[in-house]
Amino acid sequence: MSAARVVWGARGQSVVKPHNDSFTIGGAEVRRETEDRFRVDRLSRTLLAAVADGAGGSGLYCGAWAETLVTHLPSRPISDATALDRWMAGFCDGFRRHYATKAAADSRRRAKFVREGSCATLSACWLAANEAGCTLDWLGFGDSPLLILARDGADYTIVDWHPHPLAAMERDPQLLNWKDTPPPTAFQSGRIALPARSTILLASDAVGLYFLAAYMAECGTADQAPSIQAFRREFSQLSERSGGRLGVAAAKRAAMPLRGFAEEMSILRTALRSSESFATWGSHRTQAGLLANDDATAVVIDVVVRQAAQSLAPEQVP
Amino acid sequence: MAYSQEISRDRRGAFVFLVDQSRSMNKPFGTDVSGHEVSRAEIVADALNSTLEELVNRCMRDEGVRDYFDIAIIGYGRTNRPEFCWRGALAGRALVPISEVADHAEMVEREITVMVRGQPMVERVVTQRWIEPVAVESTPMNGALRLAQATLEEWIYKNPLSFPPVVINITDGMANDVNSEDELLATAQRLTRLKTGDGNVLLINCHIAGGDLAPVVFPWNAMELPPDRYARLLFEMSSELSDRHRAIICEIFERELDTTPSMRGMAYNADAVALVKLLDIGTRQALVFSPAMAALEAADRS
Image 1 (cartoon, rainbow over the protein chains, first blue to last red):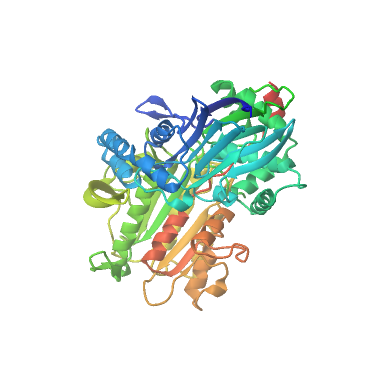
Image 2 (image 1 turned 90 degrees about the vertical axis):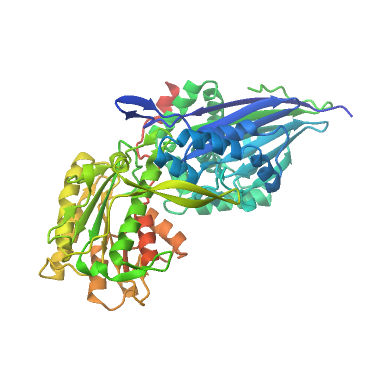
């Protein structure tokens, strides 16, 4: 049997929130940095991609913690909560010691760091090419969405997603913290054989909500697996709740004549070519009320799997 | 009136805490961790200091404390006139940016045990205090509400688009600087008629008693209250809370959102736990989309 040929292309960017990104200390302007981090890394026959959203309101040094999480991700998938805990044990104490020393000069900062730790979400995936095609392993902890979509021309069909259930987007997110042993119930993971053409989107919560709302605005109802129908039902129920994040995102989307999901993805791919263009993309949408004023991160991976005996129409992978 | 404005440095929020300092606040209210009896004034001071510390922590980033809020504390009962309670370098100030509040805390170092990945670890950290327990005189609550109104009129003039100010009034009794209940209600209504572009001032009343009677917290209907004129008066004085507050409260108190069509910001006969919960919920703020609309299509094309 001939091996399948897998072609992938990936792009990611992370930018600080458009408004209030600087403040003054002693007359000097200090520019706030994004607390999101992402990683796209090719490791032999594996592609590793991750997004970590540092939760600045909870704890201190959350950007550095998000950086630590994505940097330390191993080349092989983390498949369960025990493995996640074992992996974190390798760097938590070093992080704590380093940043406790850094905070020591200010007793209030040190108190906050000691009491609250440092918090971030983590969503990651590992794509591995193999004889049969391409396998994707993913993990999710918190509310940074991960969408796995099958692509057929301009049609996208969601295949799997994080978080399960979507109601997790409405609550305070579960966060990885160097202080805590991660609760197993908050860990989500999956493994999937990717369709011949697929797209994976990893994003921080605001960007993820934007694309969830865009997808649901035009998602058809026919011929869908029970799990996808359940996804649709849950999204609809949450969207109808007054004041919820999904409801607000869906209402904003519905109130404006906008592009279809495929066009939105195409624009995002273009925007991800540079940090500046992604910042402009986010800024326009924040001004339009479609995107929360938050740090924004997105990673898009396009995958094409060609079987040796199969003749697929050529497709450009960005 | 959306109560949806995102809190930012450009659209900061405001909290005004009104604290009853009348003589009756000396009455016992509960016990501390070592089992010693503590007064209402002590528990209120501890709860308020913890709330201020939490607000400072929520505004603290890697770079420093960011001015998301202005804070005022009005005490009533130390004398027969209400007064702002800041001490030291802040004495005499009304609403103070939270970075300055943070800079002027009294630091108390203590040892705490924190759990680090399941293992206990002893650390010495500072806790911050701004007010001390006071229980001296009468209950000039009407004057305190009027002082809050005058303070917030000016703040709203300077911050017309912000999330509306939240006033939290902690008391153990009826005002004695009014001739009638209607007079107090009218003062409260004048306060809650103040508004920003995002909604009216929210007045949350917490009546503490700590007796055997069960507290009534965030009632949606006056029928939930005991047949007590003062309870009804507090209900009338208290603001109806925003949908976001209502959703948070329903989640915390495990109430059905669908069968709780509205909710008043009040607690009656509150014990120490109810007081802390009310302060926690009352100081949570909206964090939702900016309502600004722009020509997105044109922007993307440009």
